[in-house]
Length: 547
Image (tube, rainbow, N blue to C red; front, side, top):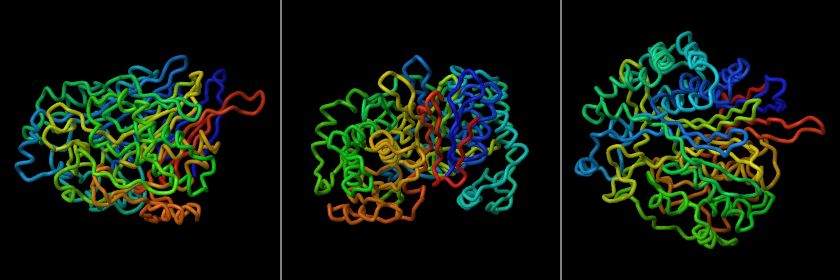
């Protein structure tokens, strides 16, 4: 496990920390801090490197969400999520026989990507270094090359025949430790560094998206700013204020399930099978109606209404699993979707600087390389976040021009009651992200575990194998994945309470995600406060960097 500690000492000038799913990215972020950059500079630089070295997780063709904590101010949320093109028509998709959104190879599933607008907004509000310096490490890696990781090598088998992927895979699937150069990606990064959003949405990328979309997008779609600063959702649980991004993100589920777990009296012993049962049941109670209530514009005051959460907690029994739901908003034919467990290929990163600015940032392609469509000569893979739209007529999340789909990305942070930053945290894992975060928070904030112990500990995760990507709550066949290194009593305890238990290989990120954490903790007497970082061992290339 990558694990690090650095003193919180603003007077020395060179103190900070970055955690990411790739050590090249965290090292780049740390170098930006050492150059006098802020946590925002480090976060954007780290995110850009991830877009280069891990295109199966994220990229400029995807979305980005973040929560930012600045000293002396309430946290703020950043929604950099794309919107459906002006040419989409749900009635036409239904007429073609689609009960749910197409998953691959269809531009109607590709909202205009929001990540680049997100980078620019974060840098513009909180950055200190020139954008060219912030994007410099990513540009260098794209143009000069880097060594393919094991995960990139394996993932390349999915797309080596996709038109436009030949720069990444010039000779077929990438051999392990192959040298990878992406000059077209570097060229796009240089355009952004020089011309901002005009270099991306108004440049080569935008032109390719318009041409390849064949009417799905119009020029006006490229001029809309996809980065929105907004008030985060907040809820007090376990003596901390938990902050996350609002709808269309599912982040409210992290807050709701944590509140519910606390309300029903989850204990402080994570080895107890009752602890695992209540984690599962709190997640089920919080999320059972997600298909009906999560959409672009959903009100956080409703989603986190105390009576609504209390009613959800009332569903829980200590001795047995709640009966399955028939969920509102389900498609007419859910079997038309792909059957996968905990879908989602995403990455999370955290950055904090000596001044105490903290950034919790998640970015994603949705599913591995997204739609398996490439923006022409740029070599940039386009996400398929539009799979989150509904095709049920009149549903509040029904596909429509300019609309944002329900979103799995759920970055968050925690503060103490006096407003001091205590934790930056987020994860990959598709529908499982709130479940992952809830468990880690319960371990750290309630059971008193340190970040490294909490992030490495065994997890449970709800799955609905027949429901398809990002449709966990649309199935009535819910099972519970349990990592094999879990306490032995978990398996029996969950089974006895009526859960369908699915043992999985320990440290399997596709089922239980990969999290990144930075905690701000009190040091020894007279030693001030410290940053403690942990990068999930389920992410093979993960790295924590500090100085």
